[in-house]
Image (tube, rainbow, N blue to C red):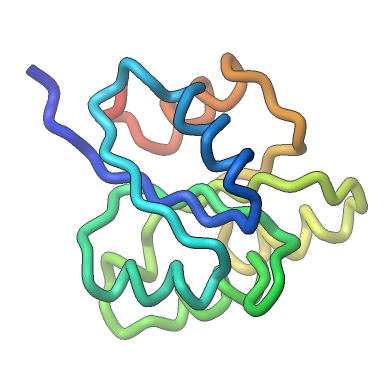
Length: 128
């Protein structure tokens, strides 16, 4: 029986968070949710998480600021946490900036369930 892994979904859209949960159903995942980067960081400081899937454009703390702050955290498991950025922002510089700041992967919305699953499998091998 596969061990349950925790995925933190950070997106200001409850609809997007629900779609991601549906795409990853049938997996041994527990989902935590946050509506912006600041709430996501609070969650990560108190709960063990194996993967973050975050939007880029959110009110309050956006995904790029979130990843920058995450990579500056004192705890090594937070600095190395896999983060998939999921955004409708098509500007190539956003992808470049996200990857330079430490994103593990970058996906454009709308993303297919198959593509999201493929990338989750790549960045979280134990999820297979």
